[in-house]
Image (cartoon, rainbow over all chains, first blue to last red; front, side):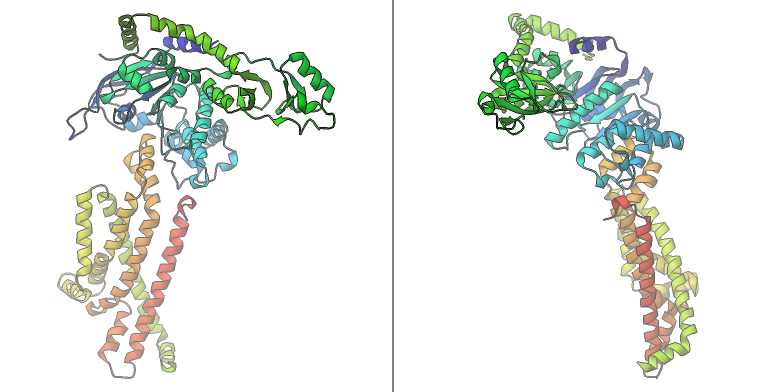
Length: 411
Length: 216
């Protein structure tokens, strides 16, 4: 199934969280922080609340687990009105991850994860098994059970924060800029990991960020919020990037929405180019032969475990005395099959010969992408873009209004 | 010096008896201080004004000369243990209260928020998160109070309270006589040794009761 089809399927999914005419006026403030917000959040989706600072996105999220009590309006979780139920019990049904993560420094990793299960009165053995299971899920070695948060790196703490939030298997996770305090390289990796994890766990996730790129990457659906949490647009990342509902959204997306859309497609979605490969153990004759038959001028050498090792050109294999393991250039510019096209393009631009080698998650060679293959992928996106520019503006906006209503804008 | 050692060996039982009384009255007062100081700290640490009032009152106690305070309590509490314990409790409150408030306030708001977000109620947050995290700071306050009370407890002798103050005062009353210096020295030495023992005890207790995750 294509990604598009998966997203379309979700329209028919059950509503997990419904916010109805939610408002929040903080004492001693004239203006409401959130005003008459209504939206539906569907089961199994990542919904990103994104907007400029002070727009009320965090307030909105904290009203879902009632860390902030709404001034008016109602909150439904799995169809049940939870606006007035015991808030501590409600919170034990909703996982919560914040930017600072907030692990309890005086407790071991195991005790941190066990917090909610213990409050819910789980059996010891069940809690212990669950801890092991979660550590495995987030890729932390079981030997970390009895360590303390201070002994972990920022990325590991973040993973434990997610594991702790999922401990009692809540249907909903709230995440407030969960990757905000992590260096960009680790952040990128954690985002990818989290998306992979979400494929398995299929939680309903409300994710707050101020970063539109993160929103586009993480969200199945994005709600762009203006002041007082007014929904400027609530739609899929594709629709928001190709068809911004108004000037506010356009400004917020910023420059290069088309480039940003590349981050929605994955390398695995496009055809990789045919490229001649040979083995490090092959003879020079075989390598020269493959090069000639392909007409590419370069051959990629793999080791015995299919891992890309070196690029060799005609001049590198001219002389039989040069060992294949040392000739040519090292094979760098490698991307995983689940990398998005935006990152892949970035890798290609900085690479030798403008191509990137695609590998699977065990570093085995899958293919090569070059500019031609990426351009082809862009071409398939383009017709939609042209349609949009040819249609008169009135039509565009009326269409968008309808989208907004189905998205649950409470106007 | 030889004379002092001879004095000590002759009066060993007497000095030890006084030292035990001294230790007991300080221990009782400290225990009450910990209960009152920590409870008060828990009650006021989120309320700026209440905390300031509590801290102002407890620091005022410290400015009252101990000699005068002990004397003032005689008509109310009589002689012996009662006026001694009451006065010592008042003197020992400030360090424990102040450190309890400071310790609880130093808990990272993000940690408190994630505890709340996971569904811990106020009592669970206090007992499982906030007090354990503030504990090293509270223990440091207890150690300061201990030092303070060890010294002040010597003054209790004027209201007939127990402790090494008895020897110090009787020595001071006989200045010029042979045993005067020995009596005073014996009392001071006893207090210093007791103070070291108590401090070591709380130091070890603090280490044992502080999670490895927040020890340096």
